Length: 311
Image 1 (cartoon, rainbow, N blue to C red):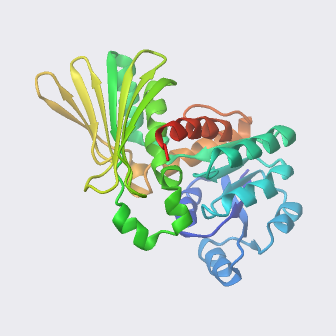
Image 2: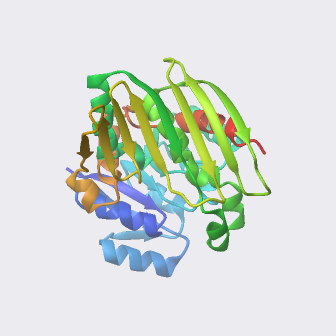
């Protein structure tokens, strides 16, 4: 038996998700919706989706769906969520689930009213190399500190990204980095932030303490060359992800161990395969499980971001 999915949104990221779903036998996209009819027909033909709808409500009223995959643009996700929640169909929404806390609070109220199960797509939580690192830390213990660098190429991005999206870029994109603090070390207790922002160019340094007494540092410079990286410091080892898709462990004797990604992370966009497998489990059980996050978790992350993004 295949669980029937409805897809909302047919952009580039949808193609990445469909490539994965096609390889999971218990999942089938039976219907897709998009406002752009020509693009929708082309997309449906490519991925052999039988039914297409230009109207979301019509699709949700007509089809008997077990789950929804919501992959719309950053600027449309809020309005789409408000529309679909009332149908009480478990859904997966690609990040960002909302652009700000006010939107998130409104969505959470609707979710509570209709008791709609949901998860947010944060694919880095499913990186096979990150999961291996967490297992190593659990086995070896003594992980004491984490440093995450989340630099952004602002001068390049402003040429290609919608201005409204760019003005919310920490939420639209950099939120991955802030989520990884909690992913590796748990709940944050306190944050101290220093900024040297010039116009829209952000230069952020933040230090934090976790409830388990570990410490973290976040650096983000939007006018300096650099890429995202994670470094975890433990007694006798350092774990480095730089870039995030490549990892290694350095030991006290300076020997190094490469953390190798799974076959699925090499074949598909990293994290996507396992993320969708977890969504399948979610549909079956109706229960969120680690490393999944729902929109309430998303809201909590936005609260942390608001402390860091002092405007």
